[in-house]
Image (cartoon, rainbow, N blue to C red; front, top):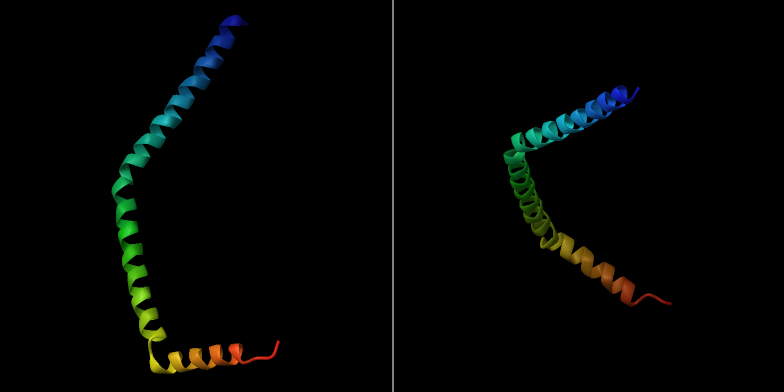
Length: 77
């Protein structure tokens, strides 16, 4: 009985070490991919910010915003 407990404990420990080693190896393979994903996300965010800036600074949107603010300031409370 005592020998069986040692075998079970050793098997559990060995399985934990294997899972840990597999996680370390898989993280090492994807290390460069994370940087590439950040770069693509950054480029997309900058592009979206540029488009949004062009839309907000257009004459049509600025006049609509001015009228909206004017209505809000002259409204009755």
